[in-house]
Length: 120
Image (tube, rainbow, N blue to C red):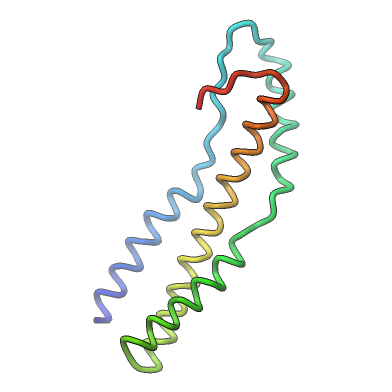
């Protein structure tokens, strides 16, 4: 059971971390766009997006609770601790991914409001 739990944890962290750190840049239709002005607007929109509240902490707490409950169901007190730790890590990664997705959406909305055609 321990080996399966460790393998699942490592795979989940590997796949989740890749998603959490990949903040996609907006792709615009460059037709009739002053690229110097676009770079300025993009920088301003990215600065605005930094106001998005970090969600990693709340995700870690909820993940630890769920992991602890699962550990309590399937094993002893050591399983509870390990499962809560795994759940906390995965929840934190999930929260960080949600934060990055929201920041990306804020940047795209900001650019749309400034008149750019966002393609992605």
